[in-house]
Image (cartoon, rainbow, N blue to C red; front, side):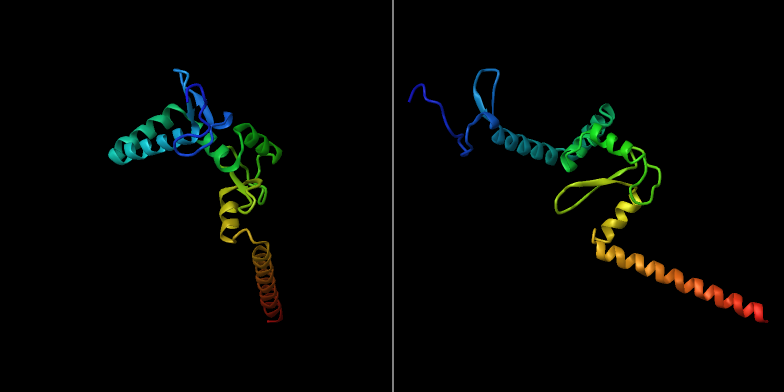
Length: 168
């Protein structure tokens, strides 16, 4: 059939405006298929020369400082660098939990693992602490109670020791 447009690619993806691009020769190409071909090529290239791949990555990072972080923020949290900087400024450059000073290289993005919603920026220690406590508020409250009870026991022991030394 001359003159009719294809509606699907060879792999079955629908050829609509959102998932196609036009080559310099004027041919329509499927974006999902191109991404898949690109991934396969990268995988073959990495496995053929792993040391060369590592060297290329090191060189790219050196030539493009900050770009990897920009990519990671967008991919993992949906944040632009500007969004991240604004959030850091809104928190007065402090950890949302312990108020330790943060800068853009030390701040960890805290997010809800179920909804992926960003909650704020934390220092590394607080971020790891929340992770170990499984982001579970009941466990976190139990840990806080434990610390309070432990502190009360120590305070009572100190008072008993002082009382004994005063009577002798």
